Image: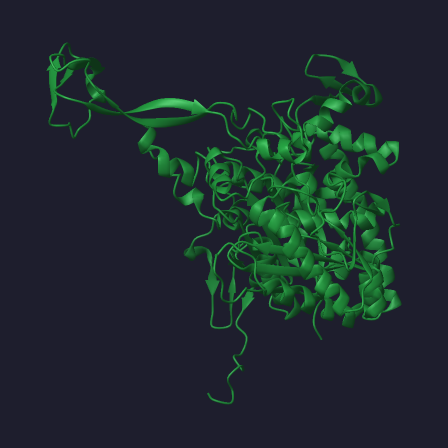
Length: 638
């Protein structure tokens, strides 16, 4: 009997805001929500972006006004919304109009009789001086350089990027101010915030969870797809010497793509259990999710944290994707809309999945999913937001271009549909399942992905499976995109609204539509309408994955067959308290009264602290031991 991996907590941060308690999802479908929920979303954004502070029962704005909640929203509500989703890159990251570069030049004297000369600080003289340099000491600190011939030089300059939009985190949010960040790269700052949000969102104290699980029955699987490429990570290591700066001892170690997992183990959970980092371009989140799901199903793990944290909005990464022709440039967007009387397009509509489009929009995000086996969730009274019974991943086989799409996704989507049909029946698959598409907004993806979805849907007899694509609002957060898809899909069962691809006014003519219904507007289906979702990812290099997400009501219906009425009644009593604690955390977060978990130097253990026998290992601070089971796997040959 396989254990069912259920979602008991989730959190993070992306361009829509905080993920836990469905806040980011609700930002996207805000206009269809009741006014009380709208107010909570906007208040959360106010504290998140430091636009207002709650104290002594009132909200205090940056300008010093003291307002009640309603007055605050009336005053700054529109500006708060403008700080979110895809938009023009804000100077808090970098100035897209003045990106620093250096031009290689050769300086030549005005005539053969003249020689170039300049004064320089002696300490700035190169160690390996060109042979045509004559250096004369002027003072203790200055030297004169005279050059016989030409001088090769790099001249500092700046340029405007042709790509100016991104799914940037809400303007004003700064995770580094919430804990002792110690020059952590941006992606790791986001990790600390996002993973803490996921743990605290569960409504169950982590120490209680840890007391119920052996140390080796925990797992953390997380990554990003590119590494930390900003100036505090690999980016600084690669360019510091070239721009006259010093490489630090943190540039290399903190740049690794597995650092999100390492940070969660070392500073948040204190886990000594299984750890791993799977990287597969856009499918990275689902690759890590697959490892956790398989481990829980087999009983290897009882609890797992899956995550990703990507911060790829840097001039260098943007330029790399742009030269591939992958990103939506401003001039192409203007041409797409046949606009010739303005300098810039509407950046909020730069990502248009399955419509006439010209490239994807880069985004940043940190997303974390807390999973348990169903038995542990029932025992603890955990809130069950959904379940992940399976994830399928496949490569593309032989290719020409390594970045071109291939056949792997036909396998992942078709196998996922077959598996889901076995679980919830043909009608459940074809009539009560929606598809969360990869939906990057490139001309090639709209054709190839729509063909994958249409071919799979019609093969199983579907006539109108709803398809949506949340990158239209968030941008493409690279390896963490699957986490965005997963967590925002959970909101559909909270508020009953399936987000539409509202940046796309109509489908492109080359999009395959048979068997599908592309959702171009937000639509209220009802909280229990859908039984499941299929989350799809198509990654560069041939990395494809499809995850199955079961609705919470469907999961509870299944678990009613596994547990007695008495067990479920006891679960309901515990669950009421867990829900109360989770909502208390949500309200505290809305009011700016919680900080990330960051346990630096906390309960650090050494080998001398362990009690090791031939039966088990006991670790201080862990109630249950690591036990050595009898190896019976190879009895037939041992």
